[in-house]
Length: 400
Picture (spheres, rainbow, N blue to C red):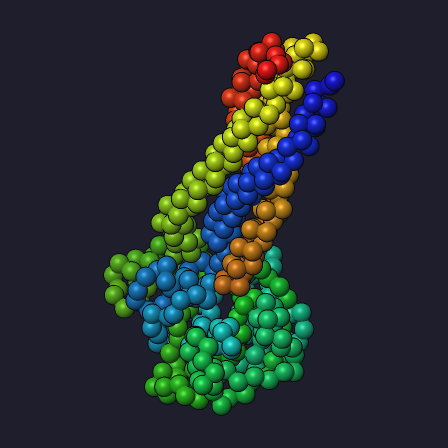
């Protein structure tokens, strides 16, 4: 009888415990790969996303809050800045391009942002990539027209030619509808950036929309800035953050987001620790499953020994059986990983517009299966030792 046949028959004989143990290993492996991949991809993607800008100028407050509100369209604005502040910074010799934005309304939960047409023609949201239109064209700055981000258009089921009424505030309230009617004139092609989940309208239209304070008709939420060079950013940082006390200059954007991930790094460590503990419990499950079946296997092992099987063969068969259970579980773990990672990626896209690819290859894809299989093999050492020490005579002797 070959080693492979011994293992196959043992797994089939104890099929239920094999399936349950393999599923627990699949859960552990899927969780471990998901936590690691999402952590690595999120940090790399979010620190790289700036939709083509180097810095953000906004009201006095937290730099992180300003970046989240202006770039990722999360959180509420800390206040407004004046038209004079915008005029000053856009004509500053250190500034290459300045794009104003204004926020404060939504369309059934999707944020409406007022801006200027130059955002879609003069800005590369990634090197070599400008915003393209899947349908239609950019809005006219003086018309009640809108450009839909691709994800927003898909979820709201709006296309070129459709009309809508904005709702006041960033949180959707059906009782807070504006009287203004906007016509969709363009739908952006997917950019896999936060711009995909935004409804874009002319800046002047949002500032003067019915129900808004006319005294703030020229105010802005923030200014997105392209700089002429890194030294320019440090000069403006000194002018606004160190010497001034009215406005906040958030620069560089990537470093601010990286600082956020460093602050919540403990959460990633907790999730990783949980994944490791689940993996250890699963490996212990392999040990317990095989060990508890040893009393039923003793006679089979003794018969194998009587037929000439060496102790080393029996020992190796049990260790390999544990490893095979681990390998089977890790094969299933890719399905668990796909479910967890795809679900988390969908939530991140809905909330931020940033797209993560769960199937980007990473070392964890081979490290986790290898480590879990080895861990399960280690878990099989104890029952293998019990099998190794099985006494032929006493096991096969009649009980009466």
